Image 1 (cartoon, rainbow, N blue to C red):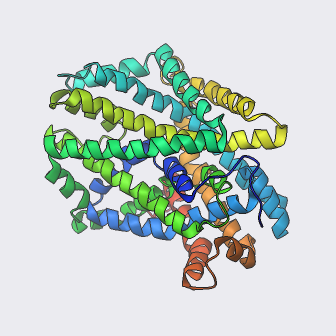
Image 2: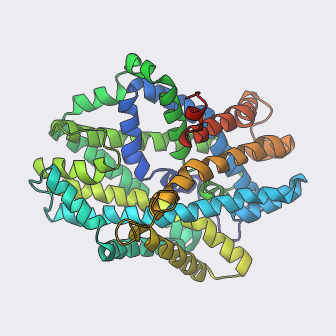
Image 3: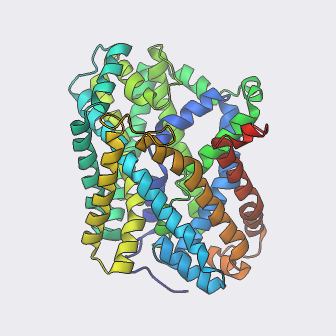
Amino acid sequence: MAVTSIHGMWSTRLAFILAASGSAVGLGNIWRFPYAAGEYGGGAFVLVYLICVAAIGIPIMMAEIMLGRRGRQSPINSMRTLTAQEGRAGGWQVVGWMGIVTAFLILSFYSVIAGWALAYVFRAATGVFNGIDGVAAGEIFAALVGDAERLLAWHTIFMAMVVLVVSRGVASGLEKAVRYLMPALFVLLVVMVIYAASAGDFAGAVDYLFAPDFEKFKGHAGEAVLSAMGQAFFSLSLGMGAIMIYGSYLGRDASIARNSVIVASMDTLVALLAGLAIFPVVFANGLAPDSGPGLIFQTLPIAFGEMPGGQLFGALFFVLLVFAAWTSAISLLEPLVAWLVENLSFSRVRASILAGVTVWLLGIACLLSLNEWSGFTVFGKGILDLFDFLTANILLPLGGILIAIFAGWKMARASSLDELRLGEGLVYRAWRILIRYVAPTAVMLVMLNALGILKLIGLD
């Protein structure tokens, strides 16, 4: 199948790896993985996480890239083409629709949170955090979140940054952006790790992240394994159409299996480096490492405000956050833009602006739910929290399950052999078992756990 995408192709295998890694690396890598590792036994959790990446994350990533490259279109149209080729019911197009809707909803609130990081770059650089305590840090964050106009300004700037990249196309936009942003992200991470090693409690951080505490792990084994499985799936940007659309731009000669392993490895490396950059600073200042998202916007500013060079390195840290958010956000907008170009014959620029403005408008509802509309709830949740709950706990895992089922059960063996190009050897047979049985079962458990159903029936 020597088909190419009408949107363009990655010029090299490296371009795809950088783009897919950029999609996978996001705000969650910077705080959730290191925190979860420390909470569930350090090295013991990291070991389980790596097993989950190998058994769940990589097989589903291979499947999603495979579907994208074989369809060579937006997720919706790729699934339409593949269902026709495989002689399956047209209802499987729902996989594509779910991916685009999920990415659309995530980007609407992701942009708001990325706006916080943008705002904090300037706060750190101008010395706002110098000498603050916990109360002051909370007040600074509350003042930002409570100011709808300020949030709107940062949300608008970030969405404009995303639209600017996506509107320029695959080669001049997506590829050029990740060629600069991903190396810059890694350089910033290394700089932050070096700074943390010299100015913070590096030994304490290494112990927190890597020293296996099997007693601590054993005490929460079920919860820890489910957390590791969930992190392995969500961290790789699966189930939202981003990896599928990026796969549609991948050359026929590129190895899907090898590239998937590299992307998963880079994503894990970033998460570990982030932990080594953050926790030495946290421990050196006697701060709590288990404060979740608050670790970034309330705990770390206190530390940077107390440490030598904290003003500069605090600003660099939030620049790092912005880069991580930016590379993820462009992958979230791309599937919708590709669909608009294919189905409505829009120019790339027009499609990007329309998609961006629509996401921007929905994002306004998300940011208003933090202040002016805080009294409005649906099922007890504000709009931003509702979108977060729906995407993380239902749409993303369901999308991953359906991708696994289609690739493993509905796609002909000959088709997957032709696309993966692994031959009939051990690697292909292992992938086939994992994608048909292990991965969908594991993701289903993660979804049931997130929804509280396992607890309800006493299986947590």
